[in-house]
Length: 411
Image (cartoon, rainbow, N blue to C red; front, side, top):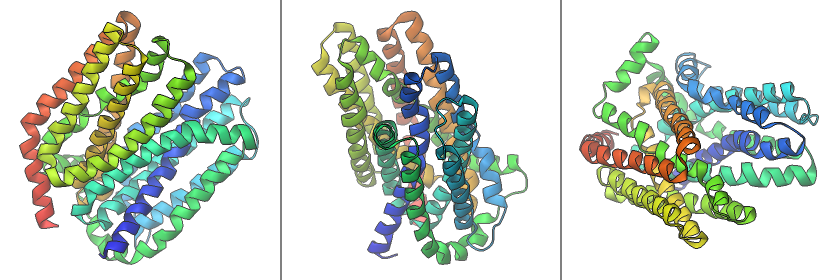
C-alpha cells in the first residue's frame, strides 16, 4: 500500500468513526438540554438514556456480519445496507419536531442507536482487513481523536445548529456526512473482495467462535486490561462537570474547560499517544499511560480535598483529558491487533462488548459512592481502580507486548 493510499484509508476510517459517534452523542448527551427546556422530567431524561443499550449487545450483532455473506466484499455491502437504514431513520426522526412526542422520539433514537452500533462492526472489520498491522495503532489513535471531536460536535455544535436552524438541520448535516463517508468505500471493494473468503471462515457455533478468541496468545491478559484500563478514568471524566459545578465554578467556564478544551486536548493526545506507542511498543506504553492517568486522578483527589481552587481544577482536568486520550488510543489500537483477520467482525464485537460493559458499570458504582460518601471518597475509589489497572498492566505487559510483536512479524 502506498503512503497516499494508507493515509487516505486512515482518514476515511477516522471520518466514519466520527460520523457514527455524533448522532448518539447528540441524541443522548446534547438533546437532554433541549428536553429540559421543553418540560421533560429528570426521570424521563434518565429513562431516555436506555436508548444506549444496544452497545452492550455488539457481540451478538457481530455474528450475522461475520457469517452472513452479502456478495463479494460483504463487509462493504454490510456497511452500505446499514447506511441506508440509518439514512431512513434520519428522515423519520427529522421530518417533524418530536420533542413533545416522547414515545416516537425514544423509538427512533433507539433505532438509530442499534443501526449505528451495528454499522460500527463492518466498518472496523474493514479497517482490520485493509490496514497493515503496523498502521493499526495509528488507526486506534485516529479513532480515539474522532470520538473526542464527536463529543464536542454532538453535545455542543449540533445543539447550537438545532437552536439556530431548527429541528431538521442536525439530521440533514449528519445524513450528508454519512453519504460523503460511504461513497469512497466503493474503491475498497477490490481488496476487500480478495480477502473475503479468509475473513468469513469461522468455527461453527457462537460459543466456539468466542472461545477461540481467548485461545490467542496473550488474549486473556489483554482482556483484563480492556476491562480495567479505561473505565475508572472514564468515570472521572463523566462526573467532572458536576464536580466542578459543585466547586463553585461558573457553568460557562465548566463547559469551555471540560466540553471544549478537554475534548480538544483529548483528541490531540490521542494522536500523540498512538504515535508515541508505536515507538515505545505496547509493553512500555501501557504502564506509562496508566501511570500518567494515576497521577492525574491523585492530583484531582487532593485538589478537591484540600480545596486548591478553580485554577488547579482546570489544569488537572486538562491533564486527565490528555491521559484519557492516550489510554483510549492505545486500547483502540490493541483491539484491532487482537482482532484476527479471519474473524474480523466477531472478535471486534466481543471486545467492544467487554469494553462497553465495564465502561457503563463503573460510573454507576461511582454514582452510588458519590451519593453516600461525597466527591473525595468517590475520587479516591476511582484512583484506587486506576492503581489496580496500573499494577495489572505491569504484570501482563510482557505477554501483550510479545503478542503484538508477533502479529507485526507475521502480517
